[in-house]
Image (cartoon, rainbow, N blue to C red; front, side):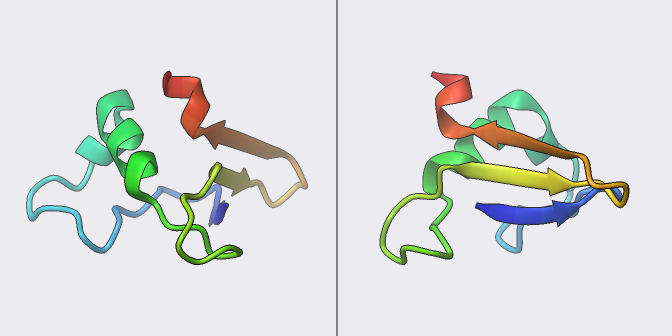
Length: 67
């Protein structure tokens, strides 16, 4: 999982120049998750991304949500 703040999401480091917001769209996010490496199990794909809100709420987007 990748923990992100509730603030405006930032594009991944390998995002193409000029494509800052494309990865936020469904197809860009699906492609990003398809190759996202797990921080907890290196060499394996991450299950998804968890967004953390300052008031404690969380939201999770999983790779399988796009299957």
